[in-house]
Structure formats: C-alpha cells, structure tokens
Image 1 (tube, helix red, strand yellow):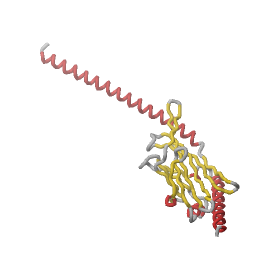
Image 2 (cartoon, one colour; image 1 turned 120 degrees about the vertical axis):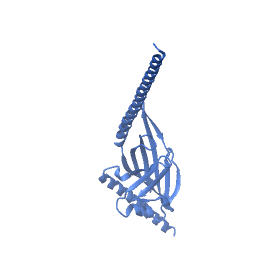
Image 3 (cartoon, one colour; image 1 turned 45 degrees about the vertical axis):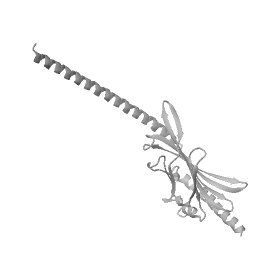
Length: 236
C-alpha cells in the first residue's frame, strides 16, 4: 500500500469520524430540544388546567358594613384569574381584590382599591402560591382614571397593594352613577414596565346579577353621601 493511499484512508476515516460525531451531537441536541419542548408542553397543560379550574371561581359580591349602627362601608369584592405570559412564563395568577366606599364621619367620602395577585406555580403535583406586589395599579370608571383623587398608596396586610381616593366633591360618586351601571376596570401590572392587565369587575358574573350588585353598591354610596351632607349641615 503506497503512502498516498494510506493518507487518503486516514482522511476518509477522520471525515467519517467527524460526520459520525456531528450526527451524534445533532441527535443529542434534538433530543434535548424535544425534551425541553416536551417539558414546556407538559407545564403548559398543567398551567391551563389550574387556570381553567380557578376561572370557575370568578366572582363579584357586595358587602355592607355598619359600625355602632351607622353605615360605614360598602364593599365590592372580586376574584379573577389570568395567565401571565409576560412576567410569569404563563403561570396562572389569581387576583383577589375589593373596591370599597367608606364614610369618615363628619369629614368625607373615600374609596379604597385593594388588589392581591397570587402567582400559582404548579409543578411536581404541588401548587406553590406566591403573593406579588403589583408595581402598577389604577382604576378606571367608564374609561376615566380616578388616579388624580389618590391620597394614599400602601402595602396591604397580606402583601398586596391598596390605594385610597378622597371624594370631597363627589366626583367619583358622579362617575359611578351618571350613566347607569358603569364599566369599572381595574388595571395593573406585576412588574415595572410590564404589560397592563385588565379586570372589568361587572363582567365577572352574569349581567342580571351584576345589575343587582351595582344597585346595592350605588344605594349604599348615596346613603353615605346623604349622611355626610346631613352631618355637615348639623355642624353649621
């Protein structure tokens, strides 16, 4: 066998080895990609199942509170769920919150918006719940933000966020009552610069039920306004 033939055999052997190695690496990478894709699909199915189950618990209720025989609070309590693909990799996020009207005797009417986002990470057969403080929070009534009436912004007792609004001139009450049942839209984002999420609370339940709850909330609001006017006049 001459040297040229030996050299060609060596080259062919090296080329075959490289082709084999590349083929092996390609298959390995493909299997890894498939495994990752498979894990993603499995997690997506789990997250969707958790979301679908939680969505059946979407709700809106009204609660009226009295203190020492005097009406003090009217509460719209809501719960909703969505999947956050922007900041939580598609994990379901349960939103528990409330929008309250309160009467500070002889002083003013004020509102408090409370939102507690709970990220539900489902893996390994368990669901780990983590409360996240929403970096952005606002409330719109028929498309109008009430942010300019804000007087307080603080962390709630369960690590959510609360915003207080004063309504000394009854602007918020007017927005809530002037066009019938309004669209109350809670806007929020879990992270700074993140996508805004929206919950239209009267759309969480059938319209007939929503009308009843709105009417109760409005009647409660009007009762507080009348009581405030009466109390202020008695001081003159």
